[in-house]
Length: 201
Image (cartoon, rainbow, N blue to C red):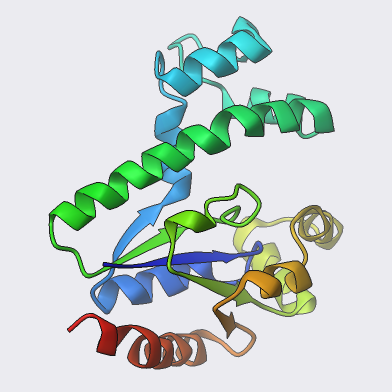
């Protein structure tokens, strides 16, 4: 089984690339969804997060209130580092478990879509790292329309992420998403043909 790690900054087109890869026959694991599962009550990650940050981060249902937790960790680098030290290894094991299941089902191509693939040190799980990128002005316009955010907030989020240059150091392949959907999908098809198709027969 070939495992592709798909990553990239906000508004760079990861989800669209994921959809196209799914159409081409890949099984996609969305790390965000795995993260949501890790926060479910009484999982190992939940126990550790509650022990570290207190009962006040919980909703009445017992689930972690991600907004409350976010307001704590994003204003305090030490708190964020503590949360990441709990969550990243737990999610690594969950992602590895998903891949093991797909291998047992004779899946040929799996994709882990994860914005923090590199930062969380999940790259040992994958054979290739595909990075989506787009010019900052394109991202600001795209995310502004999609999420109704002001430009300065979008630029702040871009600055808080790993830089394009740093991601590029880890990239097996780069997908540039400045020219719209058709061009993006064409690039993904080309990569699939050149890097995946021949290896899955």
